[in-house]
Image 1 (tube, rainbow, N blue to C red):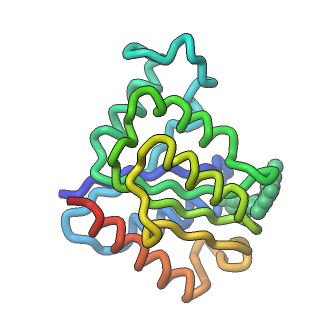
Image 2 (image 1 turned 180 degrees about the vertical axis):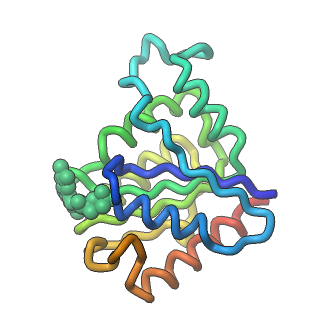
Length: 173
Ligand SMILES: Cc1cc2nc3c(=O)[nH]c(=O)nc-3n(C[C@H](O)[C@H](O)[C@H](O)COP(=O)(O)O)c2cc1C
Protein backbone atom coordinates (compact mmCIF):
# COMPACT_ATOMS: atom_id res chain seq x y z
CA UNK A 1 0.00 0.00 0.00
CA UNK A 2 1.32 3.45 -0.94
CA UNK A 3 0.05 6.18 1.36
CA UNK A 4 -0.13 9.61 -0.27
CA UNK A 5 -0.70 12.72 1.82
CA UNK A 6 -1.85 15.81 -0.07
CA UNK A 7 -1.82 19.45 1.00
CA UNK A 8 -3.62 22.29 -0.76
CA UNK A 9 -2.22 25.80 -0.44
CA UNK A 10 -5.72 27.22 -1.01
CA UNK A 11 -8.38 27.12 1.69
CA UNK A 12 -11.01 28.55 -0.67
CA UNK A 13 -14.28 26.66 -1.05
CA UNK A 14 -14.36 25.48 -4.66
CA UNK A 15 -10.60 25.92 -4.97
CA UNK A 16 -9.01 24.86 -8.26
CA UNK A 17 -6.12 23.37 -6.32
CA UNK A 18 -8.54 21.29 -4.30
CA UNK A 19 -10.24 20.11 -7.49
CA UNK A 20 -6.83 18.97 -8.78
CA UNK A 21 -6.18 17.01 -5.59
CA UNK A 22 -9.65 15.43 -5.78
CA UNK A 23 -8.87 14.44 -9.37
CA UNK A 24 -5.58 12.78 -8.33
CA UNK A 25 -7.46 11.01 -5.54
CA UNK A 26 -9.96 9.68 -8.06
CA UNK A 27 -7.29 8.14 -10.31
CA UNK A 28 -7.49 4.38 -10.24
CA UNK A 29 -4.37 3.10 -8.58
CA UNK A 30 -3.85 -0.30 -7.09
CA UNK A 31 -2.84 -0.13 -3.46
CA UNK A 32 -2.88 3.68 -3.28
CA UNK A 33 -4.44 5.47 -0.34
CA UNK A 34 -4.80 9.21 -0.98
CA UNK A 35 -5.61 11.50 1.94
CA UNK A 36 -6.19 15.24 1.50
CA UNK A 37 -5.13 17.24 4.55
CA UNK A 38 -8.02 19.13 6.12
CA UNK A 39 -6.23 20.69 9.08
CA UNK A 40 -4.29 23.54 7.51
CA UNK A 41 -6.53 26.26 8.99
CA UNK A 42 -5.92 24.87 12.47
CA UNK A 43 -2.13 25.08 12.37
CA UNK A 44 -0.95 27.88 14.67
CA UNK A 45 1.43 30.54 13.44
CA UNK A 46 4.98 29.22 13.49
CA UNK A 47 6.79 29.98 16.74
CA UNK A 48 10.43 28.89 17.04
CA UNK A 49 9.98 28.89 20.81
CA UNK A 50 7.40 26.07 20.51
CA UNK A 51 9.26 24.25 17.76
CA UNK A 52 10.41 21.22 19.71
CA UNK A 53 9.44 17.56 20.16
CA UNK A 54 6.23 18.60 21.91
CA UNK A 55 4.74 21.32 19.68
CA UNK A 56 1.04 22.34 19.61
CA UNK A 57 -1.15 19.27 19.04
CA UNK A 58 -2.19 20.09 15.43
CA UNK A 59 1.50 20.32 14.54
CA UNK A 60 2.26 16.96 16.15
CA UNK A 61 -0.61 15.44 14.16
CA UNK A 62 0.62 17.07 10.93
CA UNK A 63 4.16 15.80 11.46
CA UNK A 64 2.81 12.29 12.14
CA UNK A 65 0.73 12.39 8.94
CA UNK A 66 3.75 13.41 6.85
CA UNK A 67 5.95 10.82 8.58
CA UNK A 68 3.35 8.12 7.90
CA UNK A 69 3.07 8.98 4.21
CA UNK A 70 5.09 7.28 1.49
CA UNK A 71 4.70 10.35 -0.68
CA UNK A 72 3.38 13.90 -0.45
CA UNK A 73 1.58 16.03 -3.04
CA UNK A 74 1.51 19.80 -2.58
CA UNK A 75 -0.82 21.75 -4.84
CA UNK A 76 -0.84 25.50 -4.43
CA UNK A 77 -1.74 28.82 -5.99
CA UNK A 78 0.45 31.92 -5.85
CA UNK A 79 -0.61 34.88 -3.70
CA UNK A 80 1.01 38.30 -4.11
CA UNK A 81 3.93 36.80 -6.05
CA UNK A 82 4.68 34.30 -3.31
CA UNK A 83 3.72 31.09 -1.53
CA UNK A 84 0.37 31.34 0.36
CA UNK A 85 1.03 32.10 4.03
CA UNK A 86 -0.94 29.12 5.35
CA UNK A 87 1.16 26.70 3.32
CA UNK A 88 4.46 28.40 4.16
CA UNK A 89 3.43 28.21 7.82
CA UNK A 90 2.92 24.44 7.55
CA UNK A 91 6.31 24.02 5.89
CA UNK A 92 8.08 26.15 8.52
CA UNK A 93 6.86 23.73 11.21
CA UNK A 94 8.55 20.85 9.34
CA UNK A 95 12.05 22.33 9.09
CA UNK A 96 13.39 21.22 12.48
CA UNK A 97 11.40 17.98 12.56
CA UNK A 98 12.93 16.85 9.26
CA UNK A 99 9.50 15.48 8.29
CA UNK A 100 10.16 15.94 4.56
CA UNK A 101 13.72 14.62 4.53
CA UNK A 102 14.00 12.13 1.66
CA UNK A 103 10.20 12.09 1.24
CA UNK A 104 9.05 11.56 -2.35
CA UNK A 105 7.16 14.76 -3.11
CA UNK A 106 5.19 16.19 -6.01
CA UNK A 107 4.71 19.93 -6.42
CA UNK A 108 1.89 21.37 -8.48
CA UNK A 109 1.51 25.13 -8.69
CA UNK A 110 -1.88 25.95 -10.17
CA UNK A 111 -2.46 29.67 -10.41
CA UNK A 112 -3.12 32.55 -12.74
CA UNK A 113 0.61 32.79 -13.39
CA UNK A 114 2.35 31.00 -10.56
CA UNK A 115 5.99 31.21 -11.67
CA UNK A 116 7.17 32.98 -8.50
CA UNK A 117 5.48 30.63 -6.05
CA UNK A 118 6.61 27.62 -8.06
CA UNK A 119 10.26 28.72 -8.00
CA UNK A 120 10.03 29.59 -4.29
CA UNK A 121 8.44 26.23 -3.47
CA UNK A 122 11.22 24.37 -5.27
CA UNK A 123 13.75 26.25 -3.10
CA UNK A 124 11.79 25.60 0.10
CA UNK A 125 11.37 21.90 -0.67
CA UNK A 126 15.12 21.77 -1.37
CA UNK A 127 15.79 23.39 2.01
CA UNK A 128 13.73 20.75 3.82
CA UNK A 129 15.34 17.97 1.78
CA UNK A 130 12.17 16.71 0.07
CA UNK A 131 12.80 14.21 -2.71
CA UNK A 132 11.61 16.28 -5.67
CA UNK A 133 12.52 15.48 -9.27
CA UNK A 134 11.61 17.42 -12.44
CA UNK A 135 9.03 14.75 -13.33
CA UNK A 136 7.16 15.44 -10.08
CA UNK A 137 6.92 19.20 -10.54
CA UNK A 138 4.26 20.91 -12.61
CA UNK A 139 3.31 24.55 -13.13
CA UNK A 140 -0.24 25.07 -14.42
CA UNK A 141 -0.85 28.70 -15.36
CA UNK A 142 -4.26 30.20 -16.23
CA UNK A 143 -5.77 27.53 -14.00
CA UNK A 144 -9.27 29.06 -13.89
CA UNK A 145 -9.60 28.60 -17.67
CA UNK A 146 -8.82 24.90 -17.27
CA UNK A 147 -11.50 24.15 -14.67
CA UNK A 148 -15.27 24.10 -15.07
CA UNK A 149 -18.11 22.69 -12.98
CA UNK A 150 -15.71 21.26 -10.44
CA UNK A 151 -13.77 19.35 -13.09
CA UNK A 152 -10.53 19.79 -15.00
CA UNK A 153 -11.69 20.56 -18.52
CA UNK A 154 -8.31 20.90 -20.22
CA UNK A 155 -7.21 17.54 -21.63
CA UNK A 156 -3.52 18.48 -21.78
CA UNK A 157 -3.59 19.31 -18.07
CA UNK A 158 -5.31 16.00 -17.27
CA UNK A 159 -2.57 14.18 -19.16
CA UNK A 160 0.21 16.07 -17.37
CA UNK A 161 -1.36 15.33 -13.98
CA UNK A 162 -1.59 11.62 -14.76
CA UNK A 163 2.08 11.58 -15.81
CA UNK A 164 3.14 13.48 -12.69
CA UNK A 165 1.25 11.15 -10.36
CA UNK A 166 2.75 8.10 -12.03
CA UNK A 167 6.22 9.62 -11.60
CA UNK A 168 5.52 10.23 -7.91
CA UNK A 169 4.41 6.62 -7.37
CA UNK A 170 7.49 5.41 -9.25
CA UNK A 171 9.76 7.55 -7.09
CA UNK A 172 8.55 5.68 -3.99
CA UNK A 173 10.87 2.75 -3.26
C1 LIG B 1 -4.93 37.61 -2.44
C2 LIG B 1 -4.68 37.00 -3.80
C3 LIG B 1 -3.49 37.26 -4.44
C4 LIG B 1 -3.22 36.68 -5.67
N1 LIG B 1 -2.00 36.88 -6.24
C5 LIG B 1 -1.66 36.15 -7.31
C6 LIG B 1 -0.34 36.20 -7.82
O1 LIG B 1 0.54 36.92 -7.35
N2 LIG B 1 -0.04 35.41 -8.87
C7 LIG B 1 -0.95 34.54 -9.43
O2 LIG B 1 -0.59 33.78 -10.32
N3 LIG B 1 -2.23 34.53 -9.01
C8 LIG B 1 -2.60 35.28 -7.96
N4 LIG B 1 -3.87 35.22 -7.48
C9 LIG B 1 -4.91 34.51 -8.24
C10 LIG B 1 -4.94 33.04 -7.93
O3 LIG B 1 -3.98 32.41 -8.73
C11 LIG B 1 -6.29 32.45 -8.30
O4 LIG B 1 -7.28 33.06 -7.49
C12 LIG B 1 -6.33 30.94 -8.11
O5 LIG B 1 -7.48 30.44 -8.70
C13 LIG B 1 -6.29 30.58 -6.66
O6 LIG B 1 -6.30 29.17 -6.49
P1 LIG B 1 -7.62 28.41 -6.00
O7 LIG B 1 -8.57 28.42 -7.15
O8 LIG B 1 -7.15 27.02 -5.69
O9 LIG B 1 -8.16 29.10 -4.80
C14 LIG B 1 -4.17 35.83 -6.27
C15 LIG B 1 -5.39 35.60 -5.62
C16 LIG B 1 -5.64 36.16 -4.41
C17 LIG B 1 -6.94 35.85 -3.70
